[in-house]
Image: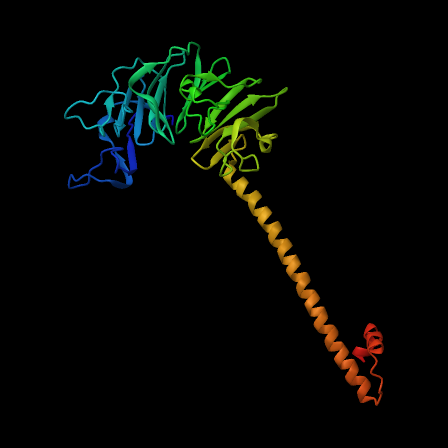
Length: 355
């Protein structure tokens, strides 16, 4: 989140504070753990804030001087600063082991900070369904294998994305959810995936977006055309590709073929995209629309079958009634004809029934 104003700034937090995400007190100076309205964090009132980032249970604050403050649940070094006796981790404090940066991002239990010149620092840890992957990094560690200019950084739940000035994308983190966008089949590669590696895209990458465990790139296609590719978890249709199949490698999202997307952001199970006309597109809604259409089609077919069965049943009942009434009419005229074949013949002439 970028801050638009640098004067008279105030920082607010709200929501759950049950896991030490932030410190809030009521009028009686009692700690609050369910903060239902925005609560001002006054410790940063004198700073000019340019960006804020929230992780699973921690947060980062970036100032206009390139300094980074952290606060929240201090689990395995996720705050990037040493524990100091008497200091409450829920109160924002400066990360002293960082040079000036101009970008920050948070994942569930990890963080990165970078500048446009290619300086990237990482701390915290990634995790999969078995727990933390590798050893937690308890203070900012420089990523030595990133040496060129940086355009944008992002973090998902357990992955990191860095868009380079050369229009290439580096990803790393947990490959279990397929969100790093490349094949990872061996146990050895689990640790290797913690190192930045490029996504194989033949086209220049213009922008990157991410959700919790799914990701997107905007690429330059032929002439003036652009395309959106996505990969990762798709169990709720969050990729917007018309099905619920997870994608290990980038796949083109055909829905956006003639739509110029300028921004996207994903949650855990959904994604929202913004086009140049200011129209928001909800990818899960698209998926649900497809499912709803399929359900409606199935229901229509079921209803059609039921109606046909009902018509057949009604037709049989009508035929029985016609036969009875015709038989009565024949008998009432003193006609002793009782041949079934004659009755069938008379039934075919419906005019007799209506006279």
